[in-house]
Length: 502
Image (tube, rainbow, N blue to C red; front, side, top):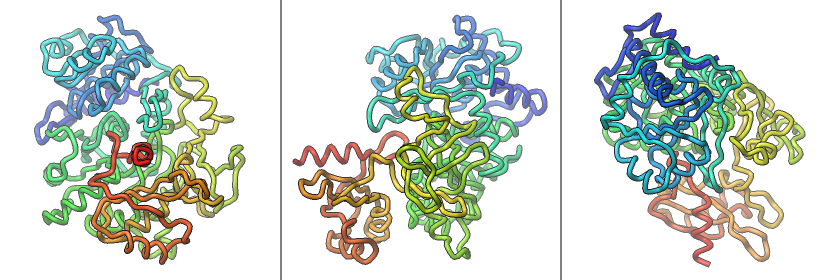
């Protein structure tokens, strides 16, 4: 099934419902949304694009992003979303690796892509060429596609090397979309989804279920994340749902408390994409109330591994509420989740191991990379590379990436455990813990801190809360932690800083 059919059906049934907004301004109802997507598909067909071909979107969040995306699906092609904040050389690698012939890009990207030697034709927003796309003869209906056909070719963030193309099928998008009202939040035509995080990533993956329910789609006029703008749009539209990285939630809380904002109109904030520290989510819930839901996924199983419900995030009556709030929740409906040892054999509740997942939300493999696929998919199970444990009630606690675990004196140290303690200090804004080679112990713990706390105070805090061998042996102060374009801390950069010092 072609996921684009969901838009075509809503155009038939609810064509006059408001669909896409730029800020407060209505850009298209569902019929106009459908018609414009059909014209994009018609234009792609005229250029020789065939079902299964790849077409890239290298655009900031904007109404045309959604229209182009559905146009690609209507044509039977696969969308290749590229974060608009990536360097042109990074985008050029993705275009080359994916075999993309046509790229829809934001204004200003064409020259940069050309300078980077990117292949294919670039259709730049705001140009006459781009406008002419919408004059093409529309296709009559979305192309027929099988559930296992490629719909979305997502490139991993590449924090440890060259990005790999994750093959996301129409079946996967359907599974993740239908899990949303079951495991995350209900969706109605009166709701609005606000795209403050990149539509090339998690935020964009939730557009399909909102199309299915003929909800409203709001693109901030800024094209990105501005807390004051989010609060204004939420008040205006009401019943707003949005996806946010943990760093975004923390920033929203800081701005709201300083400006006296209550989050009026915000119905649900789904957070994921990195560790949400306990102190940060407690503060956010205390200020905004019961609006938060956590999900855990990765590109290889997008948005679809576990979910921590609104009730679990908010509840303070359960005897183990802190442990549950520090978890990433329970398995979502389309998947099985278990904890395995190094050989992939299941471990009993409470045991630490690698998080494994299988089901209809899991990728069939990496694009043209059978070796990486074989290392990652074992007997149908996705080896996530994330370490954690599952309690007897099925709640999964994520500890760290397996590559980030520190082994000192033969003992395993999970950086997140140390980070959680350090973040309880009022003068620590951000922290990231990594291991550094040590001639006697194998590795030693180093903490990179953003804030004004003193090393002695942090030492005492650690001694009071965790085993002494887990205490950082060195502290480094930074103005900010290095992050990629999705807000994830680049621990590879922190390790490189330590290497440069040596």
